[in-house]
Length: 367
Image 1 (cartoon, one colour):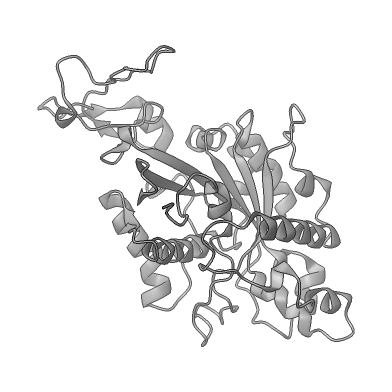
Image 2 (cartoon, helix red, strand yellow; image 1 turned 60 degrees about the vertical axis):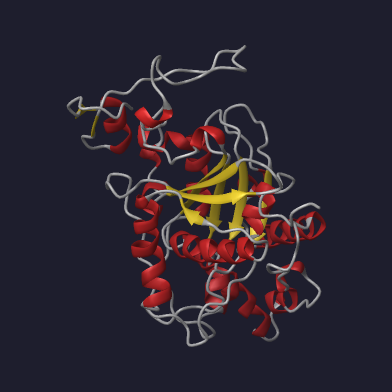
């Protein structure tokens, strides 16, 4: 997009993706040719200082250094009340700590991310000690990506982390399939699908006297997953199935004379320990053990074959996938306020470290 005095006009491409009129200056697009090792995307006679870089598909303005960087794009999906927004708030704090211990700094890549993360995620949870509000529907103009610069790791170019937090309201509506605003699902590097165990009657009934009453329950996760897979279409993102609010699930260990109590009181289970941020890289052995344990829990919950096999509904191809268990808060909130014990994250960085494993990003620098 040119930095000149050209009058701004309605951008039909950006407007279609956002669902509202968007104005911009003149946009030039180009694609790298097959033999384009020395390809330069800049219009003839211009330099990088003359333009703003935008996404060629949706015309969203991209951060500085995007052209000489790498990136990982994540779509965050799940029914209402699964805790996606709270998870993102805590995940970023955990990634900040992880980067810091290796001498790196995680930073918002643009002013929009800096403002939105503070106002929508950080302030309600960490300053006001309350629960983050639900994500607005895609019809809201607040639905733009969060983009963070993870820094330069192991001599590699800067790496950007892009997160799209999708409203559970949209995920519960199968008519959203085909909506241009959600087409990014098929282009994402990964989809993080959060599953709320409190949505299972057998679990919630046994926890009734052990945890505070949840503020609400979303739709059936099996239906939501079907919508997510249809949104992915022929895309090939990696798929992380995340059993959220796992602190509530762990309370089943205190239910006496219960089959669930016997399962959850296993002190040697991976779902009862957290390697935390001490691990220098993603532990594949630990991750596979947790994967099998969570699959077993979901089978016991009657989650259905579809939720455990994760195949493309059109061609039957299985998505590269892994199962996780996380708790963003560590304790169930009481009403709209956090538990008195504060925030104690459990395995929150596992999914992103799995996704970035062997890239050198968020791993101990090599000598």
